[in-house]
Image (cartoon, rainbow, N blue to C red; front, side, top):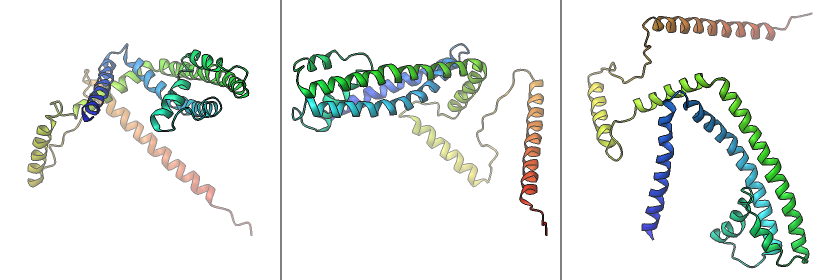
Length: 245
């Protein structure tokens, strides 16, 4: 029993590892924006999943209550096998088994009601919701495409920063690096030395860019402070009510 559990866990872990290796493609300027598109499209897909789950449970439970009442037990495995999975495959266009099952007793009132519900379900899910999802994907792709280079640059910087702070050894040998880091931190803590803190800093390839970045940060800070002060003065002026009497 536990052997199968371990096998399933390792299989899912391997799948997640393969998915995570896609991040290494993000350092390529031509492929990095595509990963940003996938990430933003995943957010749209999550909203779509919430809506589609409601329709899946709605049609699955009501249709089985009319056509398959008492034919299976309502435990977890049977519930997903007979209600959730068949209705989910409607989204992929696989509904021949559903029609074949309804054609066994075509003149029964519950079968006719289920066919009407199936037509309504296919109209909403396979036409309306899927086209809505495609429209959301198109909008996301257009938004990312207009700022592809900047998105790639920021994602590449975040990717490098993430792996900069990662231990050089792979699991399960990372605890050795953590022990060394802890001893090093404890040693500097005893010496009251906080100068050896590990930090990430971007170094420009062209030397004069460092000065330009510093000037840009200074001007941006001044503009933000001026904006905050002006906002406070404006709010203070609006809160003062003149005494007409």
